[in-house]
Image (cartoon, rainbow, N blue to C red):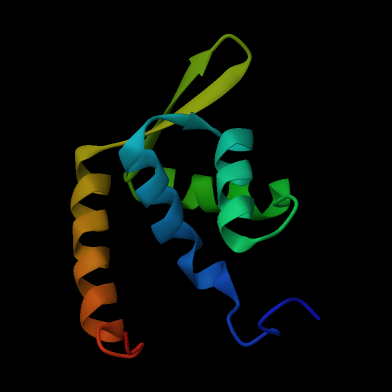
Length: 101
């Protein structure tokens, strides 16, 4: 069992985390997977996890992809920035005060 058990499955937070990371800088899929794995305390994130999430965010118009040679680099769109701001507000409203200092 992983640290913390299975009570905190992060799959529901994946889109939020991708948008957050892309708000810092454009990234390719493997770079995103590495950053997310570090934050989750795992060695690596499966391509079967990251790429469907990226596809969904692209279909929603939250991210765009650009080719840099053979590499696809993902960037946040203006719509994605707005979605991230809304998600942050909802997250804070939902979880504020749960963890005492």
